[in-house]
Image (cartoon, rainbow, N blue to C red; front, side):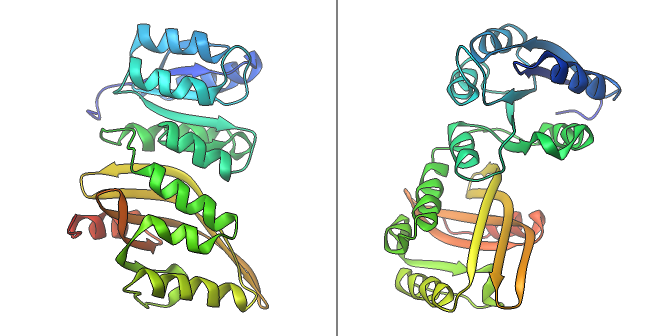
Length: 258
């Protein structure tokens, strides 16, 4: 988007008071224009089709078509629109589902109105495409990991996958078997690893997934905002690395042999 153009936003939420607060916050920003509203997913899809906004702020829990159902419909009707999900739930399995459906970002409503305005600006700068079927591979691996099915999680990677784990202190693993052994060793030492995804950015060479990583051990817990870079060989992950800065993840993707 041109920096001089206003960001055209549609609000879809079944709570009118929240829509009003979000509208007031956004329209107080000279670079944002709210071009439509709806109280459910079905009407939201219609408004998106009519207005072709730059960005949709979409609640998940609504009557007459919820947000998850509406995302794929909005993607068809306005493929150039970015979708930001607003939810009362923390990022977790539900955020994986939303991102897999085609959302670019997942935001907890408790984060506050100024955070929502900031996210609107951030996501408006993303370039298409705004959905990528490769995220389904990442989601499957992620959910198997959360279920404790490490062997099934690594099945989404190539046999010679390159993996640079955030907790590996610079270590690089060079095969699927090494990756599985590292994860099992980590968990066997009583470490609890809780990755959460709340954003995805598609690039030619792969995906950047934005989220947090909480690691707990005998010394306590620490949570860090991180950016995962995923490269692919066909439908399998060929490289995965985790960084504290988006720029590092993008730089890694640019050098992938995908």
